[in-house]
Length: 158
Image 1: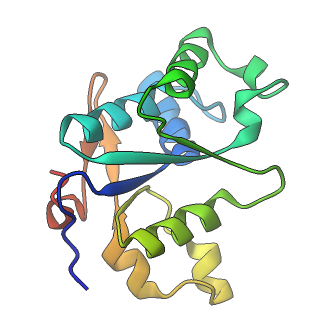
Image 2 (image 1 turned 180 degrees about the vertical axis):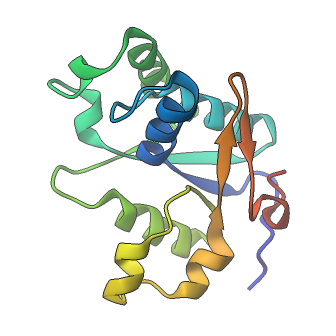
């Protein structure tokens, strides 16, 4: 199957992974997500003609988890909830959000933007190594930009 997605195709974004990574790398806060990073990644994808689908645990959109977020993070998450492109796909309580990301990427044959190595899924044998190699797109952030890494060029995301 071809790896490169046509413009307008779906790209899955690992919402929690993006939010925690942005918080640690840019905001310098460990253990508390910052959804400004997710907003930056969504905007990056939209600007390049992609249709981002952000997989995120539902718990982040309500108390008590919502109350732990900074004002800036709440504002960014609210903007995603209100976005007319409807990028958020909220997972049910008690479910593994990775399963949703993986399954959606498989059915859509699309990339997943995440720094997650999926080691737990690989060790359980529920995910072939080839999936991670072919579908995973890594990333980082500068203080003002989302920067895609490994796998981005192959999918046309860079």
